[in-house]
Amino acid sequence: MNVTSRRNARRRHAASPNSAKKRIFRQKGVTKTRIAAVLKHVPWNTVELENLNPLLQRQFVVGSGIMLARVLLKKGCIVPEHSHVNEQLTYILEGALKFWIDGREIVVKAGEVLTIPPNMPHRAEALVDTVDLDVFNPPRADWIDKTDEYLRSN
Image (cartoon, rainbow, N blue to C red; front, side, top):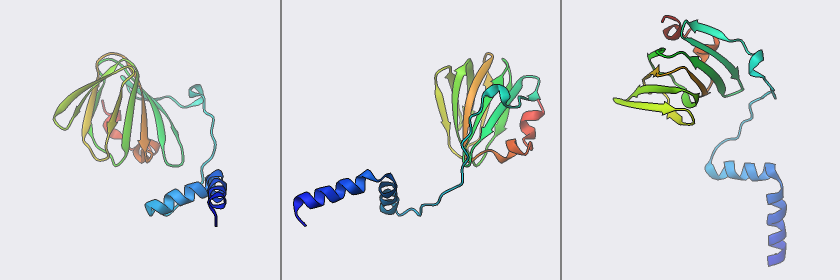
């Protein structure tokens, strides 16, 4: 095979997104599996707003392997120490939360993101009225089945 033929073969292979993905997975030694996912378009005003306690409300949308939650905390709301098997990303839209994690105090303000690894104990307090978006991977089963008593008892 001459240089031009090899170059054209590479271009044909690269033009196919499926073959490129398969090649990447093969290189990493990962078995590719597909999880059936459903396309959703969800306006927040159509999602149930749960009143967990007088200072805490939330809404969430669940995908096939991820969860997005909109959490509304009134000033002084305490989220007691807890941990979970889920990786968590917290993005503060409005307000500020103070977290206690691994012996540290971390204040996360509007426009900032905090990443919390799986199984890391943490607690938080709303310093002012706060709106945050939390992303969990995998989805929080205790939130879905409403067995998250640590949030409901305040």
